[in-house]
Length: 78
Image 1 (cartoon, rainbow, N blue to C red):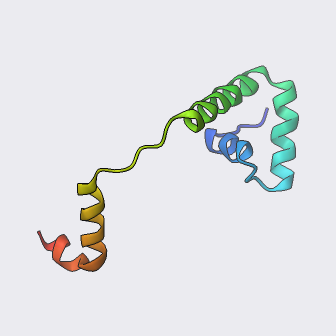
Image 2 (spheres, rainbow, N blue to C red; image 1 turned 90 degrees about the horizontal axis):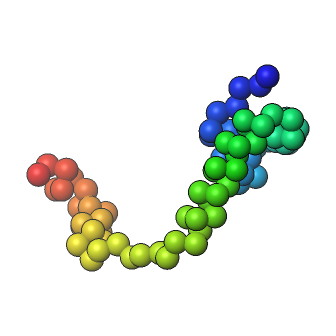
């Protein structure tokens, strides 16, 4: 039984695995119930995340990022 990591399943979910490994994952998803269940949990999480409304970061956060971009050495000294 192959040992896929959650990262492997995420890469498969986002179509970022190489062809050979993707084929192996797909084959095992059809035969291994536990792997299929783990994959379904990740797929459901992806669906829920995609449905969540996006929120903008706070102005204070954006200001801190922009200050760091313009003066990285000054901020890292404090």
